[in-house]
Length: 402
Image 1: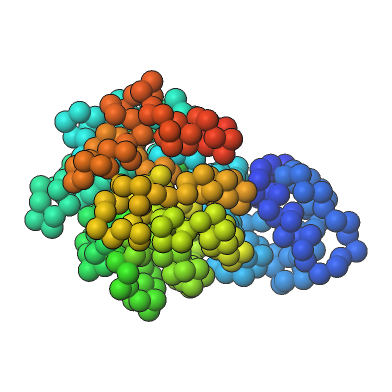
Image 2: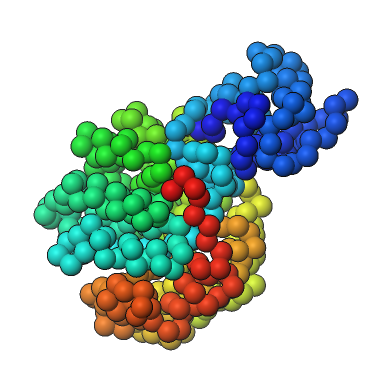
């Protein structure tokens, strides 16, 4: 989990440590400057904490000391890790994800390894890409198997373009019964080998929107606790990302289960993802979005927005309408603003093309018609990527480790 800190360490995780120590009961030692520099003053406070907690007094913040500070078992990691609400890279820099989704699994002919899309996505200034992958190319249990070599190539291309790759499986979208299929895919030796090769900079999203609105809390906890533990036992040590059920929309489920699931992970290295297809017609105005995201942030668990767009909600005002019609619009401007205020990472849906595969109106969700940044669509896509003061180009920071 967190990296080991010692004198002369620097980084945002050192700031976190200093804040934690300052929050401890009063001490005769001075309050630490929260400057991210592990100097002799920080060493003294660490040694005091170690002495008071029956730890080895060496001034080094390794797993035993982190464990006492965080009140749970922790392990060292060589890649990304979470502390409270935030994600950090292996060098201790806090990372706020700013990126887009790319349906790579459906691009086998035109853009098989992201050779076109990923360089173009990087032109927005994005620091990450959520790579839509699957067990089979048509998402059906008996469909044609995808290539692990292609998955490896996608991860390599993302990293080469300085994009943090987050890989996910799309096969169980809305289908709770297929969670075990996803785990079986991730834990096969060939896939574990790929993940281990890229573990220094990789995020693994277990499954896209697994489960509909009938998934109950007990099943959600039991299913994902088992999934996480199986993946850890197989040798997967990256941060694991868990989507909300109800096709990704049920933030309340994440609020109610995140602490339990974090405790069930032997490495405590989980993130949680909500997909904000909360439509205006169903009451998701600015106040609703702000209130719900603030409530989640107050619970201090690591949350991101894995998908959002201007469209894609349920059309409450006209249930027979398309999810890509005006009746299904999303208040994406408020999502951008509130995520910026709360320092929540996010991924816009979706770079394009291809969203019209089942509904011609959903071409409106393509950010580009042809994968090219030069042809970024006007309107919501241009705003999310370029024009908004809370969009990718104005807020994304790519860590030096990528």
